[in-house]
Length: 88
Image (cartoon, rainbow, N blue to C red; front, side, top):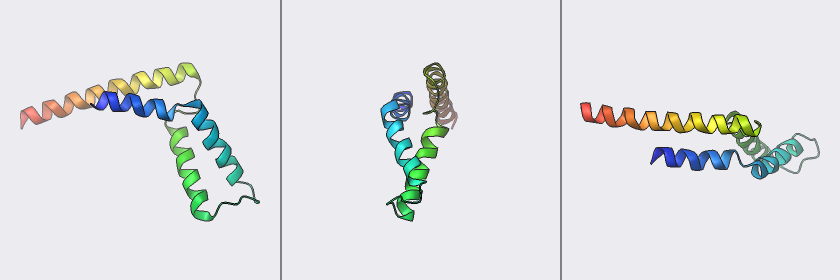
């Protein structure tokens, strides 16, 4: 299931429309006249950083490559866990 879940997660993180909205809220929260309280600003910052660190700001070619890498890692991790369980 992990490769399937990873693909779904990548599709959410790399959704351009969603990232643009998060980025707009993040940029507006940095302004002094923002109507967000400190907790809301922190939450926006956490989500923005999470999206950026997971490749939301990359171009289409790099996003596709990142998805391939994530899929491979998810598959390898699942195989490793199965092998580890079989060894015990």
